[in-house]
Length: 96
Image (cartoon, rainbow, N blue to C red):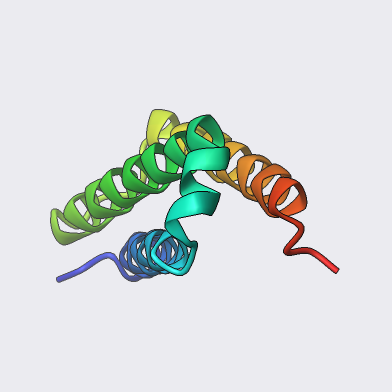
């Protein structure tokens, strides 16, 4: 039996990470060059979130609750990725 809440949490964060990575492909090459460091931070943050989401799915498939370190890691990663995304969008002039 699959533990439902961790499974849904993991799937949700995997979907959010994939959505963030697809956003990166919408930027032009010049935008990527202009904000290279923020772009890299956002991309690596999304990849870390993807890995943590997959870890949450794996834990749920073992019919266990999410460990505290995983919940904490996901929380910190989400906050960091959102802050970097907001800063990146502000620097590129995409937020209205």
